[in-house]
Image (cartoon, rainbow, N blue to C red; front, side, top):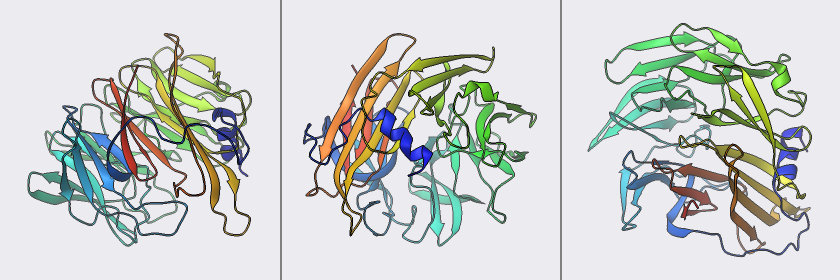
Length: 362
């Protein structure tokens, strides 16, 4: 078990035995059958998601369609008929399609080759060849992407301005995008991670290519053994979750260099398999955990899974547990969880197993 895997142990707050009891139905309204990461429309009326079928528990092809569901009517429509992710691609499943001012951006795969494409109405055009990572700035006006991979690691980030059409490349040195993206609210900076012996995080300024290295003292645990998980960047700062000791949130304010550490109260054990989260623009964080409490020794199949989600903002005292769900061996839920907060900050859409559900944030 890796140190990163152990992080979920601290944050799950769920019993560590295979016969653990708890809710047997996930919370929230079922909207559609979907999987992988998801994205809200700019007006909050639709949610873009991948069709169902993805699982980490069994070898199955990745879904290759992007659909949209209307939050009010639950009517669905096909946005990308095929080729999104694809069955042979190695794209990170945690990267959602992204809404931009020019249409919906997504990765299309062909084996190990990637292309960044834009869907606008009935048009679906290739924008650039790229690597298996991209995101947008918060104002949706720029695309950030990794270049095609010719070396083990990228050493730059591509930027496309969708207003002017300008394309630039920003060197990143030994730093690279993380699977959890954190772009500054003004869109001019991005948090990157270093994975070598000098493990750590840095903030890249997209305007002048300078990198500000975050101090090691920001993270109490050894970075190689307990790498913090980046949750995102909002008006309150950059948020991490750390499990190198008693689990806690870290809030770092880049402008002042000030940092604050907040204990996480739900640390009651559990066998962890992974933790993640997001930092909504409206403030605070969403932290989620997914566990496998018991494995079949022969097949490796998870016999008892547990999931939990919290809305947390230690600056305002919010600590609200939203999801607490246990799945037994009769339910083939993958050990994967994806979530996104609505533009108005009032709702949380999440994928658990192959269900897309909607929660009202209290």
